[in-house]
Image (cartoon, rainbow, N blue to C red; front, side, top):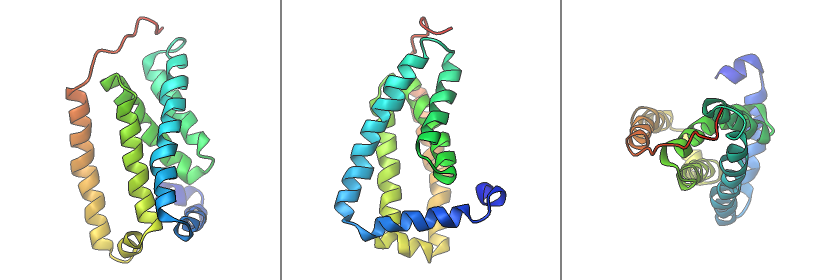
Length: 165
């Protein structure tokens, strides 16, 4: 992993911090991390921040700035780097669909997936079955992501850039 090369031990520290999740009530974690957090964060980043930034900077810069802020908001180099990359995708999904619901649903799906892997026996299974874990990763990267992006692109709506510089 790139982050681990530049910051040795940081990934292990992040994994240790996240392991506390499997000690709580799974349903409560799913509701808070999988549903409430994405809704609140999307209103904040792709709603308030995005809409205020688009008044003063170009659309491309809005997508990048809100993604960087989203990464910084997560207060960890490991999670922040990942969140910034996801933030670009969430910003683009907002632009292409013209609806806050696209990033809310994508974000919720991502958080539900990662919470399930972190805080359930499925996560333990995948950590010890690298072939299955790799197959899921490849399926996600080679199938779900391109088709999801393609679908959003085909269904995109014209974005009002009249207020952009």
